[in-house]
Image 1 (cartoon, rainbow, N blue to C red):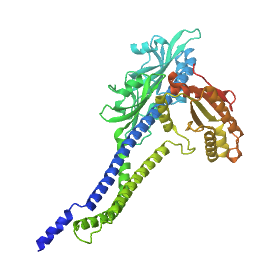
Image 2 (cartoon, one colour):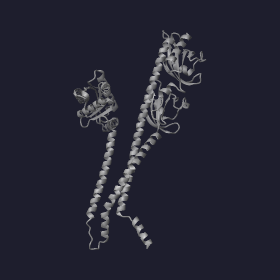
Image 3 (cartoon, one colour):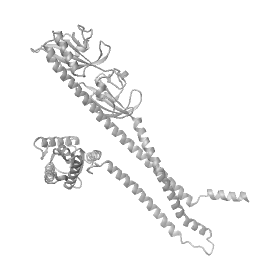
Image 4 (tube, one colour):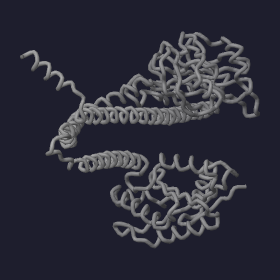
Length: 526
């Protein structure tokens, strides 16, 4: 008897009925949809993280290249000043050494200084080293043979230090070439390059390094690698060709990296700033682990609600099944059939509404990502997407480059809070002045761009003047009156590059500022 009852209980538990099917399908739908959403979102954010990191590394490499360029220009200027004093006294050792000591004491740019005559013989050096009368190497003599400022390729100094040496030629009053003055900059230890290039902006295994024209490392956080020649590195090949940009690569130790690179025009050297791909993926994984953990309670609540709803939906159908089993009985009633379809229709409607809600949330999040938080205008990311679609559509447009005149004065006098209000009020006036299909965006600070599809250059100038007058007559928050300068250009389909049209609008804007501000100027493609 007990065995029979147990058998019936097991059959009831494992019996497939409509209620279990509904619950199973609903549970699978929620779980699979959540997993799919997380995977898709992860892939999207992974690509965004990578692109943002590539862009940040390119900007950082450009910044380091600019800083190094400025340093070399400063070094060149210092040597230029000293060359005037040394050229007239190159045969007078005391005066030459005094000038070298003066320069060393007044700047931390050099670790040593030397004067070399036209034959390549060292005639003076500071600090004092036993190299007076020695000749420089033939390759070095070839480098200075053009009698122009150059930076000698890395070499080992008599003191055993790997160094580079900026040089400046010496000429007599009659224009005769007398030799050159050279500054020594060490590449190992606490050097000026170490100070300039410093710590990477990411606090992980990211780093920056500098290479010369022969692909030798001039600066690296790992000092043991200085002087090493790097091969098979796409970023180095690109930067030494004079290009700036970013790329994914595998470094010399086999680690995937996201690299930005920029060249130093004065020397042709390259700066590479890179971050490990794994550090981004680890950061992204931590973020999504938190998302998963935080979504578990909500998912459990949803599953509980689905369980309750499934029972309510299946109950009338279970009753109908029982009644159908008793089809031959006189008390058979099929009053719940129509109710079953009604419930199914509502469930479908609820699922569709839920799906629409999720899409709306995703759309809203995407809109927030592409919108400037202060002015509610489009931002740079939205601009990139719009320009890409404009290229594919091959529809021409005009461009307005707008800049608030003397905006820094407003911030300094009234504060940044009032300045932000002025920016928002200007954005409001721009929207009022724009057509439905015009594209208004803030590209940074007080700078704005307006793209007007289908407008000719003359029409765009009228629009610009209308906006300019509207702004100049409008009373801004705190009773401030402002003016704007506007640059206008036109992109006629594939007749020119889009970025050229934007550059022309910028040039026209600067022309408007240069010629008095509070005016509109235009540049038309040749």
